Structure formats: C-alpha cells, structure tokens
Amino acid sequence: MKKQHIHFVGIKGVGMTPLAIIAKEAGFEVTGSDLEKEFITDAALKKAGIKPLIGFSGEHISNPDLVITTGAHGGFDNAEVISAKAQKIPVITQGEAVGYFMKGNIFGKKWKGISVTGTHGKTTTTAMLATVLNENKLDPSYVIGTGNIGSLPLPGHFGRGNYFVAEADEYISEPKYDKTIKFLWQNPEFAIFTNIEYDHPDIYNSIDEIRDAFSQFASQISPNGALIVCGDDREIKKIISTYDKKVISYGFNPDNDYVLTKVNISGNQTFFWVETKGMMLGEFVIRVPGEHNALNALSVIALCLELGLSIENIKKGLLAFKGSKRRLEFIGDLLSGAKVYDDYAHHPTEIRKTLTTLRRQYPNKKIVCIFQPHTYSRTKLLFEEFKKAFDNIDEVFVVITEIFASARELPDNSVSGEKLAQAILVNKNDVHFISDLDSVVKYINDNRFRSDTIIVTMGAGDIYTIHSKLEFA
Image (cartoon, rainbow, N blue to C red; front, side):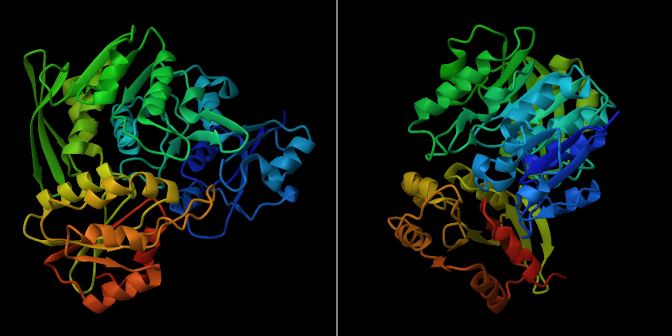
C-alpha cells in the first residue's frame, strides 16, 4: 500500500511546521516549500528530518494525496496550489488542517480535542498544557505555533495518547478566498479562552466582531467537555453570561472557580498560590517570569484537574516547563555585559506585560526596548494605545524601528515607525527611531551596553534576526 503523501505550501510558518512534524511522525511522506530566508522553525524542521524545497513552483507538486497551504505567499493563488487543483488534488488551508488533524480520521485515531485560544498567551498556554500532559506520560499530540519549546522535543507531535492539543488562531484561513476564522475549523471537547482584546483590525471592524467569533467558537465545544475561561476578562464575561454549557473560570477575582491569591517573581521563576472554593491548593512554581504567565498556568491547572490529574502531578508538569521561543526568551549575555531577551509582543497590552515583568525581574537595571511595529493596519488602528504602552515603567529606553509590513496589506503612508516614535516622545524622553535592522545592530554595538542593562527585542516581524549579528559572551 502506497504511503500517503502530504505537501505543505509555506512549510516554515509557525502554524505549518508542527502539522508537518505530526504527519511525518505518523508515517506520512512529507514535502514542503518556502522561502530561503531564515525562519524560527528552521531548526525544528531539520531535527524532524524535513528539508523544505526553496521557492514556490508547480513542479514541486509531485502527485501528493493532499496539499495544505498557508494563507500567506498568495494563498490559493500560489503556483503550487494552482498546480494541485489542476491535477484534482485536494487542497485545504492550515486552519482547516488543524481541525482535520484534530478529528483524527486521517490517522485512524479518535482524540479528545483541546483548543487554546485568546488574543494573548495562547502559544505559551498551549506549550504549558502539552508539557504537563507529556510529563505525566499521557503522550498527547499537539500543534504549538512557535519554533521551539524547551520542555518538548518539537513544536508538533503525533502522540499515542487520547488528547490532541492545538493552539487555536482567531485570524482568517485565507485572505482572499476563504475568510473562515481559523479556530472555527476545530470542534474540541475542551477549550481555554485566555483573554479577548481588539486586534487584527485588517479583518475585524470592532471588538464586538471579535467577541462574536469567540462566542461562535465556544458554541462548538462538546457538551461533554468544558470551557475554561479567565473570568476577569470583560469580553469573556459577556460570552459566558449567556453560555449554556459547562464553564470553569480562573483569575484574580475571588468570584472565580480558581483564584490566584498571591504571585511572587524571583529571577526567572514565578511562585503563585491557588485557591478553589475556599480550599487552598498550595504553592505552584513555573520557570518563566510574569504575573501573566501565572494566569496562563492557572488555566492549565483548572483544565488538568478537570481531566483527572492530581495536584502533585500538575505541579511536577508545570515545573518542567521552560518557556517557548520568542516568549520573553533569554538569548544570552553580550560581550559588553548586557543581557538580551526576545519577545513576540506586537500588541500594546503585550508590550506592557512584558516590560512590567522585566522591571519586576530586574528592579535595578536599565531596560532598552527595541520594538518593531507589526503591520500598518494594527499600528494605525491601535496608534493611541501604542503611544501609551511604554509609559509608567521607569528606566526604559525605547527604540522604534520601521513597521514590518504584512505581505497581505498595501503600504500606508499615513502611519510609520518614525511617526510612532515621535508620538511616544511626547510623554517619554528616551525614544529613538532607527529605521533598519543593520542600524539597530550598530546602535547596540556603539553603545556597548554593560551588565546594568537589559535589552529586549520585541515584535512579530523579523526583529529577532539581529541576534545573529551581535557579539555574545
């Protein structure tokens, strides 16, 4: 019997790489194509034994059984998709593929799906959950949208256990031809909603539209499962007020089912205490800093208790988690002495949370934040929020680069990195605009930042690529 063959168009994407790894581990023949430039998934693909074809060409479609395409690189207009359709080969998007994999039919499996979504924190929370299940020998399958997780072998895995854990994205499947919200392809037994804020202004006109999408997703959760939500979130409260299936809430507010009663950050660790219905569950520890990460961990605790894991086994699993790539990731110490971190923050709320965490982690050090805005549409629609994102945090020096534009949008001269820097400068003295990344590298080298300084690169674009050009100890 011929081994089934799946081809991935845009295989280096953080959503595509874990799917390709799952297919490879399940015994499928896997091919894929992408650009030659550096991606954060390069190491994961190499470790999985997958070598991408360079560029996009109809000749890359050598009679696969299925083609999975990204929404980027032309989506359904990509040369490889056009070739596949001409050959009557089925083509689905990455978002549809996650739901298709979760159903398990293609693998002869019947999994219990667990989806993790929210405007912020979904990658970290998905990675935490997969780690806890993995540490407890449950061998889950998982799809995590990043290049590397320190506590897991790869960002994707075909497990032999009963659970399929997937990061659930609120973006659209394909910008031109299929505007289905990605997570609506999933029909999980359980789901975690971390938070809901206004983002992706290129597809949502208001917070109401975003909330409606999440509400529709909530309606797709199995009546035999549960929806785990941050009960402190204003928009989530609106959803659960009319929701008729099982809800488990978590947060700081004592009205929640699971309550964070105290959070302490010490170095790279966060210690927090949890109470449920008046009963203290004790102290938990995660090896990543941040109050927001304690909240992420609390959602995992609530879900894992629902799955039947013991408190001690959950604690052990959380302690094994070491963070994810581009989520306040420690890169190293420069030869001049400064510590360098990298973070995917691209929304004003994420910027504030990351800088607040660094300030609590390093109360006596200067912070240099190098932020690369992501997309014209987000920068323009959230301009006022971005202006204030760096306020109220002492000793933070801000460098703004030019906007990293999406291939899905047209240039917009009404907004720019320089205009954002000028707007921030109204309330903050130490702000610089440096347009290109080579000049950012020169700025860091020329200033020779010493051990009294923390440098954090920030953004969803290619800002992280400057690390390879810096001199580390």
